[in-house]
Amino acid sequence: MQELLDRPAGILTAASGKHGVVAGEAGRPARPDWTIDQDWESYTGEEHGVWKTLFERQAQLLQGRACDQFAQAMKDLPIGPHRIPHFGELSDVLKKRTGFEIVAVPGMVPDDVFFEHLANRRFPSGQFIRKPHELDYLEEPDVFHDVFGHVPMLMNPVIADFAQAYGEGGMRAKRLGKLTNLARLYWYSIEFGLIRQHDGLRIFGAGIASSSTETLFALDSPSPNRIGFDLERVMRTHYRIDDFQESYFVINAFEDLLALASIDFDPLYEKLGSGPVYQPGDVLPTDEVITRGDGSYHAAKRTKSMGSTT
Image (cartoon, rainbow, N blue to C red; front, side, top):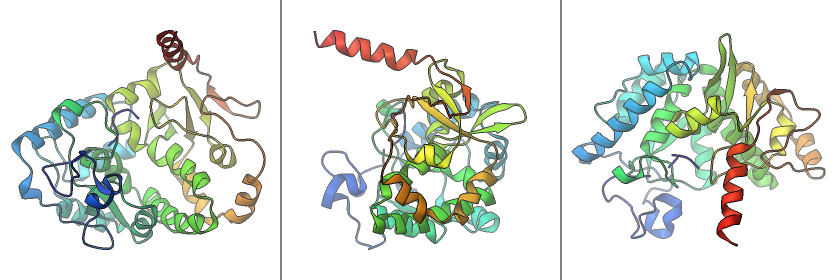
């Protein structure tokens, strides 16, 4: 995935450089909820410099591309280019607005831990930041992805309520063996969602907002499809974890997401147990196609890949 995931100086980091659950036992913290201290004072000047580089690049790119709610939240939060934000300071503002707080974790956490935090209005954020040579690509979410990408939208009461409902629904989906379907909803909304605004399509998904390359690709490239959001359609659709998305799903309003919290998912889960599963680039006759992509980016990569193997 483009520019999503990483971590700082030596805390709970396996010899492989992985963090959190990806690092196996070496990444497991002592606390059962997987939280750790942010240990803000231990960030180095180089690490603050990485944040500054990433922040300034994204702040410029997102002008006119991020949704209005994201842009306003960036003004209201104690977040800027010159230092990695302090989670306590962020939580002070966030709690007053939506009741959420930020808790530090060593990296990716187990599903049940993630859901438990969201269900209790705690957003688990990676504490580490990527290295200078990893500005454009990461395999794990770091503090820039989690804070810059996710936290501004948690200032929106509707998104905050949706995140809490998703945490509650995630625990149930895991018990029912339907986590794959529910994960697609999160992926195509909170991570890679677009919204229709009065002045055009805008970004609200954290995976786009924290990535310089996907910011441009999601809105400006002729390659991807941009399709009206439909819950069952989304939950039947695979996604890309290794590259830009081939399709983005577009909501009309954030209230559309919150409305999902009142749905009885059991009949839908039963329905999803059979029937088609769609590939990331599929366009269906029943889709509301906002922009039909030409698929040129991924087609070129497939051609190049085939050429390298012959």
